[in-house]
Length: 272
Image (cartoon, rainbow, N blue to C red; front, side, top):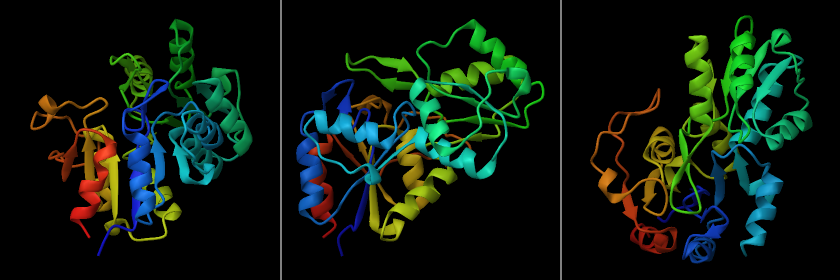
């Protein structure tokens, strides 16, 4: 029996920066031709699903917002459900703030009034933000990171610092680890993925460029894991010691490795 579902990463898998990875459109078409409507799941927290749909459309890829999850949208829903009406201080992008507002999260600009601190990717992160995070955590009940990514692949082939770097900086100065780090491979994200798919996770594959997030999420959900070499992970990294994120196995080995997402047909056809 063939696969019935697929989770596909975006940064480093479908595109890098503002450019499609060669063959990415063919990869999506291959899945759809076989009756698999991919669910795109990204740890980039800076855009909403609708904004990602617009971005993909500008690159020539049609995707419904309902088939896109971002660490930002997952965080917004999580906070609205778990910490309703709790003043929340945010270190993050304007896009993340908009998602939190739309979800009904109560935000405060006063770190001393915060009961929840959220840390995330922000190009404008500076010393004042680090100070505000330190002060917020003096009394905040909850410390939440949108995602664990220390880096993300840039369009020029070089990595950039991600949300995990900012969360780590705040955690270090405050001497307090986050209570929750969402995004891949968090169990909260896996639960949302399970809700969006219309088939068991065991009948799905996950395609991404990171061992510690994409492969780890697939491992946690019992999915077939497919690593692409078009993003952060290189062939030299395979077999090297990769520090697992909390709750995932120390043995992070993908089931399949392909150069680019466009070659996904070889994986799908082998399973039919």
